[in-house]
Structures are given as C-alpha cells and as structure tokens.
Amino acid sequence: MSTTTTSTAANGKSQNTYLTVRKVDGKPGKVYYPLQLHTAPIPVPGPGEVLVELHAAALNHRDLFIRQHLYPGISFTHPLLADGCGTVLHSGGSDDESSKLLNRRVILTPTRGWHQSRDGPEDLKKYTVIGGSQISPAGAAQRYIAVPASEVEVLPEHLTAVEGAALPLVGVTAWRALVTKCFDGDLAQAPGRNILVTGIGGGVALQILQFGVALGCNVYVTSGDPAKLKRATSAELGAKGGVNYHDKDWDAQLGKLLPTNHPYLDAVVDGAGGDLVARTVRLLKPGGILACYGMTLSPNMNWSMGAVMKNIELRGSTMGSRTEFAAMVEFVRAKKVRPVVSRVVRSGGLENLDAIDGLYEDMRQGKQFGKLVIEISSERGQEESAVAAKL
Image 1 (cartoon, rainbow, N blue to C red):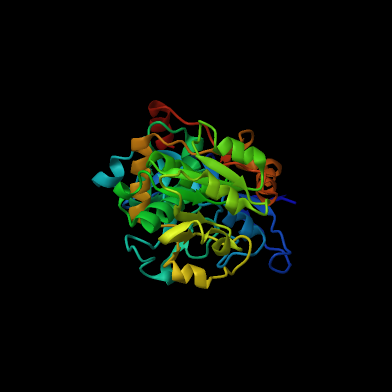
Image 2 (image 1 turned 60 degrees about the horizontal axis):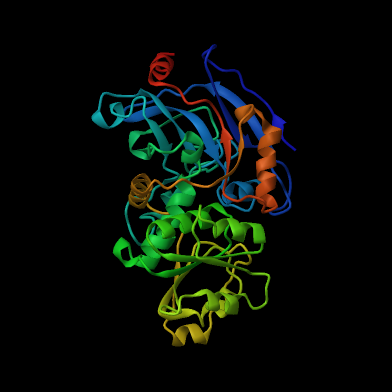
C-alpha cells in the first residue's frame, strides 16, 4: 500500500525526512492514497522562527479522510499530520519570543489563520489545519520543522513527547466544544453539570471526558463497545456512567443513571450526528445545549419540533482559535491532564511505513481508544540539543 521515494538532500550530512501522500487515480471515498517518504535539507529558521526537532506526531481522522480524498484542499507535496511535539534547536533571530524557547519542549499549533474570534476564523479563506494542506506548508510528519515562534506552546512539564503529540488538535477541538460552546467560556459554570459525550474512544471524545471530569462535571458516555465503556467509567478516566448505543433503549437507560437531584442533561457534546436529537431531547433540560463537532454517521442531523419547544440550542463547533489553544494548554498544565494514547509506532520512525499504515488501519476499523502516535526521534537533553543546534 505504501511507496517509498527519496530526493537528494542538498546539504550532504544532515537531512530532513518527511511524509506526504502520493496521488493515484480514484474517486473520492474509493481511492486510498499511499504514503510517500522524502528527504530534503533541514529547514533554516527565518526571523521570528524556530527550528524544532520533532520527537512525535499523531494521527487524526482528517488524515484518514485525506488518504480517501474526502477532505478539501489536499496537498501532495506538504508534509502530513497536524499534531507534533519536539525540542527547539535553533532560533532564527535574537528576539525574546524565539530565543527564550531554545532547548524547550514545545507542541505545534495545529491550525493557521484563526486568532481569537469566538465566532470562528476571521477569514475562512486563510484558515486551515496544518498537515497535507494546500494553504500551509507546515506538517508534523517530518523530523525537523521551521515555524514562527508564535505558533508553538511550551509543552506542559508533566507530559512525555508522545503525550504532547496526542494533545493539539483533539485538545483544542474538545476545549471549544465543551468550554466555549457549553459554558460560554466560563469555567465556573461547569461544576455539577451533567454532560453526555457520545462515541467514547475517539481522541476528541476522550479529551472532552477528561476536561469535563477535571472541571467537576458529571460526564456520561456512549459507545458501541462494552470494553470502551468499561474503561471510560473506570477510576482512571472517571465517567459517571455509560450506555451502549446499539441498545434500542439506550436513552432510557441513560435517564436512569442521572442523579435524582439533577435528573436531566445540561449539554450533549457529539461528533456523530444521526438520530441524536430524537434520542436526547427528552433528557436535555429546557434551554439545554447540543454541541456538535462532527457528523460521522451522516452529513445531516434531523431537528425536531420537540427540541424547538424545549428551547434546545444546537451549536456547531470545529477546531478552535489560537487563543483557545493557549487556554487549553494552560488548563492541561494546571490540572495535570494526560491525553489517552492508544498505540505508538516506536521502531523506525517515519521510515516504518508499514507500521504507520497499521495506525491508519486501526482508525479505519475504529479499534483505537485514544490517539495513534508515531515516535519520530528520541528526546534530547539540553546538552545534546545545543550540539544539534550547531549542525
């Protein structure tokens, strides 16, 4: 399935390695673009930029959609993947913002072109998620990357590089869907709220669960896999209860789990769509919120008069702004949240295309519980980083 090709590096000794998809003929949804490995010179950071040696990168569902030609604006020349974590080796200037990052572990911001607007990207034509995008050349599936210093955040100290790579895109998506959409950005609203998170096991859903528990919410979950429900409701993750959505009466089962002194849902956070409105309208409080960050079951969701009569609010949510990303990272740092990692390719890094294909297959079959990560390089000590920066 995968194809390996290389280009000659211009600088002889030190090379950058990166992954793209290779274009082949096929219809959207039927084609499956192979992975392609390249080498090139290590990039040189310009003014205001930093050179990051990436230690780990993680997959998202958009990466599977890219390979199936189900995502807009695909690039066949820019590196894949939006999530990356590494160490800053070199600064392109003497400004404080970039130089203070030297030898620090950082995570890449996974989007470009959305600064702080609560409503959405300030200019949709300039907004993109990095990784295989025509709009931005940035991508985390490479050994080295030069990026603006403003487009990284210092990694929370309690996280490993693999955990750091598991955080960015699911973290900001979960933060916006839960905090911005359900609580209007006010964390004080969260304690004691009953929240339903659907499709537990995916990276975003798990991050919403972790954020909700850390905020003091009563979080309930759905899944079609009893093993995933068991893990989500364990002491490790802290969901108050879970129901199997294959059961015809799962909504009635959920209603029985809600506390007697607060017997309704304040909000539902969903990434599947389907018949969710019909299933949850009875459980949601008047004026309750349904935050939708995706529709994996179908591109449409049926709205009902019952939802109208209860003043239910349907709020779309996608990714998040640079401001929301920074707030999310600081919350993870303060609450010591650890993203859930499903599986890691540790041997061979980006050159192990067969193993990386296996991660994509896990996602295609819905096997994962948490994030799928590629370990690209080992983490360096400060002395090693200083030597590498001189290469």
